[in-house]
Image (tube, rainbow over all chains, first blue to last red; front, side, top):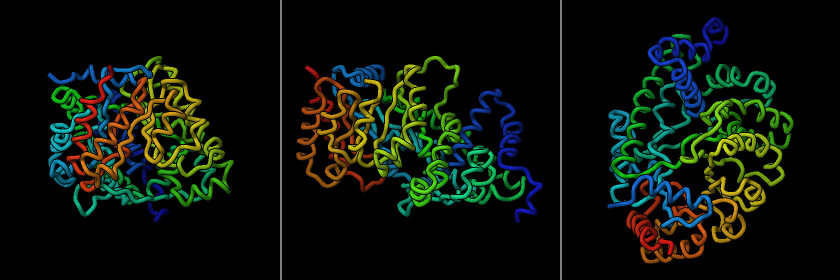
Length: 45
Length: 386
C-alpha cells in the first residue's frame, strides 16, 4: 500500500493546496489561521 | 432589568483579583447536556447547523449564570467522520459524544517526532487513525475539503451563538484562547494511557525532549504571536488538565511543568489570565498552584475538598465549582440549597470564588434540572456582598 502511494502528496502538502484553492478568497493571514485550526481539529478528531 | 454583560464580566474580574464584587459570580458548564435539555440531537445539529445556536441558548432561558464555560459543541463527531477517524462518536442517546482513545504513535518513534514534529504527526501518524488521510492525493483532498466545508459553516454558527448569548442573554463565555500543555498534547493524541505510562518510566529523556519539540505546535493554540505585547484580561485562556492527576509530584515537576510554565507565563506577561479545569485530585500539587503569580489563575476543582483547598490555595488562585454533581442529580432541593449556602458562606468572603458545579454537564442523567436551576437562583439572590 505505502509503495503505491509514495508519489502521492502528504497531508501537509494537501493542506497547503486546500489553503491556496479552497480558501483563496480569504486574506492570507485568515486562511493560514483557519488551516492551523483544521490541523488541530484533525489531530483531536 | 437584569444584570448586563459588562456587569457580569466585572463581577468575574473583581473576584479573580481577590476583591469582593457585588455578588458571587456563577459559572455554568453545560456541555452536551444543553442538547439533551433542548430536546435535540447531534444528528439534527449536523443536518441543520443553525440548531446549535438554539440548543445552546435554551438552558439560559431558565438557568441564571454570570458566565458560561464554552459555547457550542466544539469536539464534534462530524469532524472525526470527515477524515475517517473513530475517535469521536455519538452515543445511543443521540446527544452525547463519546471519545475513544486512539494512540497511533509507537514507542520507538520518539526520534522521528523530535526531529520533525509537524511532518511526523500530520504525514505519518495521523493517517494511521484517519483512514481517509491514508489514501491518494485526491482522497486526502476530498476528506480535508469536507472538514473545511463543515467548519466554514460550524465556525460561523459558533460565532453567531456567542453573539446571541451576549446580546440576548447578556452572557459572556469565560474561555477564549487555549493553553494546551505539551505533555497532555502527547498523551491525548499520540501515546495514550498505556504508552505514556510506559514512557514516564522507560523513555524519560525522549519524553522530555518530545514535550519541548511539540511545544511550538501546542503554542499555536494560544492564538497570539511572539510580537503580541498584550492580550485582554477577559476572556481567560483555558486548560483542561488531563494527565496531571495521574502523575506523582516528581513526575509532574519533571515532565509537565517546564513546557507548560513556558506557555502560561507567555499569557501572564501579556496581562492575560488562566482558567484550569483541575480534573481528578490536585492536593499533591498545591505547592505548584501556590507558586503561580497571585491572581493569575482560576482552578475549577473536580475531586478535591473545596473547603480545604480554599484554605490552602485560595489566597493565590481563584477557586471555582464546588456544587457536587451527585447531589444535584440525586439530592433533595433543600439539601442542594443548604450546600450551596455553605459554599457561599465559607468560600466567598474576600472574593476569589466562583460558584458552579463540580463537573461539566454532559448527559441528561447528570443532574436534576430543578436542583440545578434552584441552586443557581439561590446563589444569585443570597450571594450578595454586604
